[in-house]
Length: 147
Image (cartoon, rainbow, N blue to C red; front, top):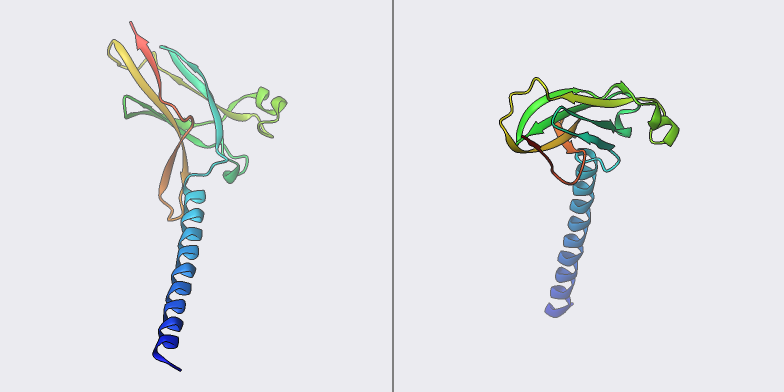
């Protein structure tokens, strides 16, 4: 075997090893993303007003158990609750098999200043390492104005 043949074999082995590592790392990253940012989390913000914020949330990864939702206003945690209010319309629409997935946050007792406020609602779920992960209920940040 010549030096060129040996060099080519080593080069092919290095390339094959690198390809296997890339495929393995891509698989691990995909699995971690799926577990931590579950794409099947569903829900909606149905009402965003100065007195109330309400909607529904469900995570097929947690079965039919109600999930915890957290309301952030202006980037700070304002309130948290289980999305367990009855929403029979979800069953009728085929979105969930049980109706206990609604939530409603009462803002009348909140001490918010006048002006524009931004809000986000997150679904809380456990990630791969057992840490809690916040999954946004909607892709866009909502806002409301207090006169």
